[in-house]
Amino acid sequence: MTMHFDASETILVIGLGKSGLACVDVLSARGAKVFATDEKPVGSLGEAIAYVEAHGAQFVRPEDLAAIVPSLSSAVLSPGVPLTSAPVRVVQARDVPVLGEVEVAYRLCRAQIIAVTGTKGKSTTTALIGHLLRAAGKNVRVGGNIGNPLIREVLDATPSDWVVAEVSSFQLETIRAFRPRVAVVLNIAPDHLDRYPSMDEYAEAKFRIFANQGMHDAFVGNLDDRRIAQLHWGQGEGRAQARQLWFTTGDHHERATMYLRGDEIVYAPIDGDPRPVTMLSRRDVPLAGEHNVQNVMAALLAALAIGCDPASLRTGVRTFEPMKHRLQPVGEFDGVLYVDDSKATNPGSVDAALHSYARPIVLIAGGKSKGTDFRELGDSIADLAKAVVLIGEAAGEIEAAIAGRVPIESAASMTEAVSRARALTVSGDVVLLSPGCASFDMFRSAEDRGEQFSAAVAAFGQRADA
Image 1 (tube, one colour):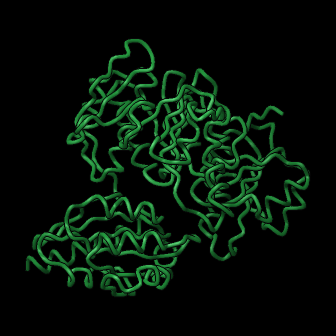
Image 2 (cartoon, one colour):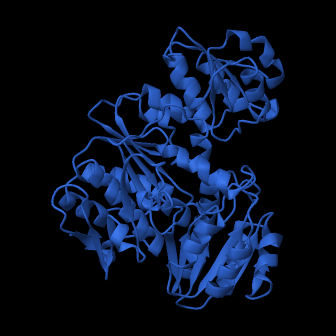
């Protein structure tokens, strides 16, 4: 069935988060008749319903969906809504196609797409690829899970433009035709196990990013990640059918397209002149942590795959600035560095953050658990932190995983957490907010959590200067 998402169609948008509201906006503007629904209590949806109605769409309570389902040509699912939700079951029972926002964006997009997924580092790598492509003279739009819905970014893109999309496992669950020109898989680590029954199912959702690719496309993968490395042709795995480009910071040089030689990041071209090319030194990477060296390698390979000039890419890496809430320094007082890593919402991201500093760390962690086992994180904290301040619903679980191996304090607010962390530091230390959990138990979002941390640090700095 061909879908045009225009006046010939009647579409239900399920879920009124940022992506859902963007779909209402775009699809209504294209002339489609749009309905919208959300399982949250109606009393909490006032602003969203007002937005829906202001854009010519109609809100329908979930219990009233049966009345409109016969008229629907398709449904568009926001990424935060699982396929098992009641509204999805209602429309699927009548054989209404259910597509994700990313799939709809892909079908509307005239530009070629570079897509990035992984458990950690997605946003940084997505933003870096966009920055590199601009440095190489490309017209670029960046969107998706990074914060601005992809459906808005693709609307005015031309065939000569490039779209760089961060895509989550949730978004990949509902793709059908989505076929990026370049697919990047950074890593697979435990996350969202409140939604997926096992790590295998979580990985399979990530691997959908290359499901529709062919040999004219490119796949960029991490040889240091066991699950991803199994996709290498050398392993006899034929699932990733695109040209394979691999990076490593480990000892897999013989199978890698990009690797470390001492402090040099080296590119071994798979086409043309095979002689290795030194791209830059790891000292040129303006981001903290070994994991960010991997992110830079992935971004470089994605840009090289579409023909960008290495010289422009070197400049692009050197001029890239850290993103907000991702190992972002927000202040330094009395010799103590304060770092906002609020976007670290899983244990793997916290582990990477802890490995990023050669200074004693006081960690602020905790929040709403996503069904994660914190035992490995507890080991990392015990090995790499001098103390920890715990916040949120998961504080007890993390404390049990640490098992008394480092000093632990608890805090009921971010201001209190910063105050307690400050009291545990001496000059030369780092106070690192890297929660390893979702934010919704105490904060509106991860961004809100990071902003409250920065505000508390700034307030402390003002008192210190008084």
